[in-house]
Image (cartoon, rainbow, N blue to C red):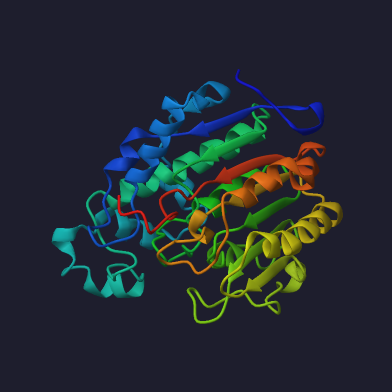
Length: 319
């Protein structure tokens, strides 16, 4: 099994899931979501030889039973049956489920697409549960806006919620860390009432989608204090982000002591993004890798499931 040297002398087993078919799905020519980028990312990993440092698996497609652990059956049936040729027949349901508008269009084989990217996250969580890996990446995952019966923000099925539910079978406490520029509203809503999952989101706030994630949004009932939001402003730089992120994540790791961490690493926070408005560079990620943030995870018993959100990243690249 491939291993990589971790921080502090630890060896971390790293794996990722990739289905070559995911690049075949097409939101439309004017849509910023491009599943083809997942295929390009895989080709980069192969050509640079990085795949030799990781185990690479093709995920199983998520079944209806697996998807229904979070999503409502009638919503899943709609995603399976509705096609571009049958939109008129399903007009009422499209409005009810928030599908068919510009952000979440109907396209060919939509349901199969959801099965593939959700399957990657479920398989990743299963590998962590079986203690066969320490870090698992799903390039096509990270659909953090999808709700139980509603599509939102390019997301139809919430693979992150499904992965966390899987992890909770073997782990008492799971931390969800979201550094996508958009608030991780779908994941926060799913676990708003529980103290077994802490959701931590750093995001743009104001006149910006989805318009949620204030400091006051901190959970209810058993989950009170377990939803943490850091709404930020335009023009965020590397140094400013570091000054906020480092002390917060250190305190969260010390106090919550998660047994597993799920990350949504959308790169739409990088400077030049078509939809973003921050000025971060890739150096900020490298800084976290070298400094205490990586050490906090490596020196704990945490296992990490990362959703790279490659498709929603770098909207300014017209690929």
